[in-house]
Amino acid sequence: MGLLSKIFGKKNVAERTGEPTLIYVPNEDEKMIWAIEKANLTLWYFEESLMQPKPEQTYFSVKVRIMDGDIGEHIWLTQPNFDEYGNLFGVVGNVPVDVTTVKLDQKIGVDRNYISDWMIIEQGRLIGGYTIRAIRDGIPDAEKAQFDESIGIYIDEGIDHFKVNFETPEGAILSLERAFDNEDLDAALACKDFHEEAKVMLSAMKMDFDQEIISSTAEVLELSFINNINENGFPKFADLQNAFPVRAQIDEDHYLITEVCWFPDGGISIQKLNTYKSASGWKVLGPVNEE
Image (cartoon, rainbow, N blue to C red; front, side, top):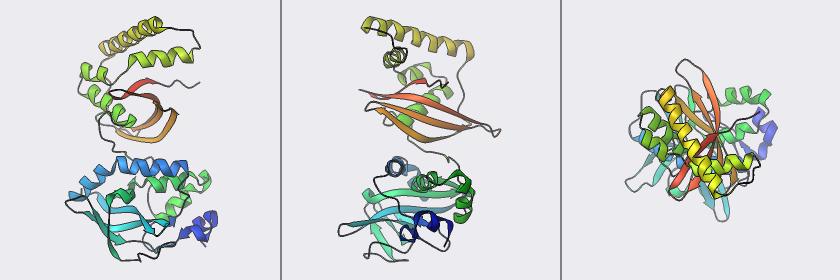
């Protein structure tokens, strides 16, 4: 019995030749729910890459939810392709454990709404594979290297491909970084919400405040933001690779986003950013200073 079988039990593990070992995790697990959501938010990158693969992209696979009556099971499909309507086709890549409606090596078509993950191997490195990462996060640190070796994939935080817009917190952060790269101050200001940033800052300071204090604090924050750029120039992100491994919900309109950046020289930086869902989309507040 392999390492993953020992951890999760044979009932939840399917061993496969030439494929990552498949592990079943309860759907209610928060990390798995976020992994599936993240996979769908970044699916556009998988589709574009599949249409025009880069030389370094050596493997493509998609995970889908297969139903058998009231029973569902998430299964990886190899040789994936999409038709003109966006429907997914592929070959069942692992032996089903709970469902009998499909079998190994069967060619099937699946509605794209049932996609739960995707993965690309780029130069031996895992891109996507968010449910695999969620499983790996639950493994003790001392055993993560053995997990990686068992599936034959180099796993780090990866590179996330959220769309650069205000539809997601991560997209808002990428929009701000693009504005910096373009040295576009107006675009950078459009990514911010200084009024909400002032409220968050004043609340953290446990101060009594009213709308007038919020407004005056917001003005100071905006002027400070502009002055910092005028004095120090625009930060540069064009040559960096980004990943967003954690999205922590503070409340319905606030998320704390962890961003990992890789520099060309091999350096890594990690920052946590407050984001806010405004009437015009997600906005970036200030970074979190941790003691």
